[in-house]
Length: 286
Image (cartoon, rainbow, N blue to C red; front, side):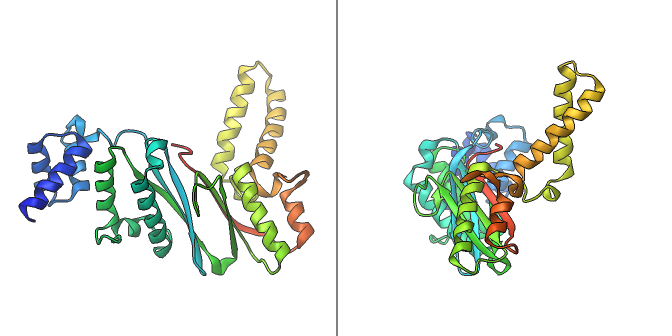
């Protein structure tokens, strides 16, 4: 590596970590010039400033969707502030990542090692962008739909640009053979964006999620002074309500609250089914 490149990497590492020149130079030497490994090296050495940017919370950013004839992918990239999320450099970076994400079928490990248009891989471009913008930026999560398994529909809530927003929902139907079925696919994507289900049916909810919710319900009832017999009865009713409110098929249809989603599907075609869905909201759960 040339002296110029070494100095550039030291500068990048200093901007990311806040650590002095000598410590950064040593970390890069120990890590064969790998900046990400150098950050880890400094952290392991107990240099507190090494987590200067990386320890901050990045809960703003963007969600992007991209599709081809055979696949559809979503990706979430986070920044610390909404101001940066509107920065042109950040948006351009996110758009190119969304293109790459589609090419690698949503595999973030492959994405991070893929070269971008400037012939530098995503990992190093990310580091450069953090240095330039001065905020923590993270590539948080992605999702992949194989269109061979069914027709995919998506909805971008309050789109900032084509395929870019703060909330994106996508659903996959087992079939969509006519305009009526396609129309309901688009509407269910909108429903998912608004109602945020956690599973398609009761059977799809993980038991530990139900157990956790049941523990919370029972603890609240105990604290309210209810006796055990009443607690068991009330808690069963509350957990049933939790399940129905959080499973897509049992949710009340946002466009007609007198019907459930499963009833709307059945009225169009008894064989029509949702086989998969996802909802990304920027910063949710961080």
